[in-house]
Amino acid sequence: MKTILGVLLCCIGTVIFAQQKISGFIWDEQNFNVNNVLVINMSDNTRVYSDAFGKFIIEAGLGDEIRFVKEGFYRTQIHVSEENFKTNTNIFLKRSEILIPEVKIEYKPTGDIKKDTKYLDDSKKVASLKSSMESYMKSPMTEVVPKSTIPKSFGGHDFSAGQVNVLGILAGAIGLVNKATKPKITKANFYETQNFIQRVKNEVDLNFLKKYGMDEEQIDKFLAHAETVKMLSKRYRKDFKVGAISYELQAVFAEYKKTNKLSD
Image: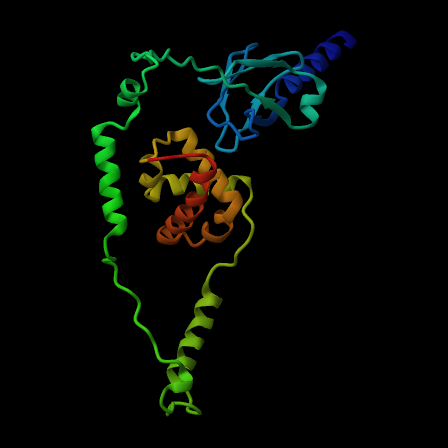
């Protein structure tokens, strides 16, 4: 009887142990989250991918080898310890080097200034472009200049002063009603944020990002940045306004492309 009970306890303990999970975040060398990383448990070949925020969750047992694989990065791995079950595990991936093809310089300076300067001067196309830009900068403005307005102190008498603005009162009342009927703004949890970002990718036109050559990983990284800066999921997940969200994203991207040196 004791033997059977011991076997049952061992089996139950094995099942419970096998069902344990580890979780954490994956980062690159610049402390940006890395999404779409393949996470493999080598003991049973379980596979998952990190989400848009670099978060991963995978079943594992004590001592299992977990590998982290993504194109453009060196592969890394860990062996699961008790500590991995207690706290989030931070994984840092190092980007692999990109070999730059050798640049061959065709012209070799001779030391003769008159001869060498012919090769150092701008090409005809570049010189033509500079000349066109200079002419444009010197040409008169074609934009419409804002009209001047007369200061109130020099204007005529305001006959509406002291009158009850009925339309203003009605507009204010309508605004209060609209405010009362709008959904309450609350902070989004992790899963609500994930669903909101996915909806943004499905419903908002992100071609202004793709024209800068941004791939899916870079777009996910930017959306996570915009969420951190503007808290978009908190403000729009219950009242999804495509136009307002698109405007907010483009405003954030105007600064983002400067710090990340993106050019179209």
